[in-house]
Length: 232
Length: 403
Image (tube, rainbow over all chains, first blue to last red; front, side):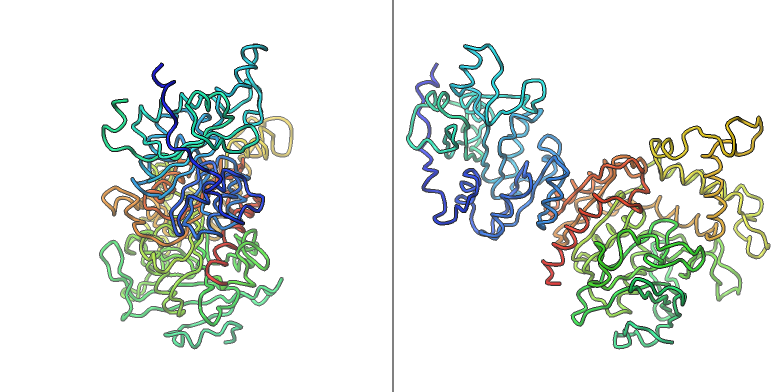
């Protein structure tokens, strides 16, 4: 139960990260990345969809972007935008990238759909100096309520499909994810939870509060120093 | 000698012999010029077989106009039995250009915007020097005295042609199958000369299975008594049966089981019952025999031996200590790799190996696997998904190059 007493790391004031006057209807998680990425950085967006984030980063920050996307439609949309995106997935297409190939690697709402989240996370930390990762929190109170009171697998905005058709095969809670970070020796530079409306929870709170109140977790990770993750 | 394309100002272009394209072929604004570049004793081709080969000639076709900055050149690399007649009627077969689906006015490779060049590979038989050409030393055909050709030799010869045309670097190098091998070799050998590369339905090496199929084809040719140990031109014979069988076998590998089933199934040719003979009862038999027969009308048997061998020898990683990524180290070329789901000759795994190597080399690479049941030949056919992806990639590359 020690983890219950752990406070979250320095609160990630996501709102302060949001570039002023650049919002323009973009998704908040995209704006978080936009606020984080330095001009000219090398960025890999895994599960990049139609390339909205990569195009935003290229047009506003002049980044050198790459993408991986499962759907053919997404890849075609990216091609039309001139984005170098490969049709593939996080499970099979990460191991060939060299160490430190990217300044920032982005994995949005995808880790719970990978076959081997631990290996995926290790690759992310290996190929990127910084990793921005977001995922639906299975510890959210609504998820708990669905299970506890209705006895049903939850269907929410972030997890919209029924259990028999969802791609999400490795659900985790924010606390579970913090545990994985420790297991693989990842340093949590920043973390925040977004509420059901996608707004950041701005104050430092114990992990367990986030774990109940956050609809999704958003983490900024980097490779910990060797041994860094061990004694907690 | 008239030509709508003025290349006479290009360095060395003045001594290029030009022959006119078939006069009938002036449709849809496309006025290709069939031309031949001659390379004399002072410009030998340094071949992988260790030969400085001279003299030789490269036959090529062009479409579109080279812009003043010479920055809009596209090189199309043809496949094993392809040729330079990419977007206009073939002078021998009378068929339409083999890549008119992709290349032409308003097409993804837009001849209104780009200057498109396609040359017959060295070792082939459609106007470039190959085993059926006359050896000036003997006055007879080279036959098997022609040096073994590699994909890299083909690319070296293409580079010499571009030098002749005054094209320092390509906007786009594109090709499928053996053409895709040439695209990869271009990107590896002359990275600074290739702005964008599209290797389609290809691999960075020929698989053991593919070598096996090629060997069956070659043995069919060599088993034909009319092949005469490769001296059939002197003997006045033609190994049509052997070459036809080779083509029949190869043609199966270009298709897919679902495509064969859809097109032919088990349907009988001209009836509904077997004839209890070895006639071509089934439609698929009749189709393959037709493929074999029509092929021998247009292709030289020895050239088939040489070009299949060139593909077999292709292994881009072998030149790089077995690490394919080293072939693309530091490349600034932007790549778009494409495969087809039902292609079992160059399956998607082959394309993924290319993509992973490019990733390892930190190259800008896009990759699309096109859903198609048409097998390997899909890259030559009407595949809207391929066209859309190609259009997106090429347009974006053109914007990046300021075209």
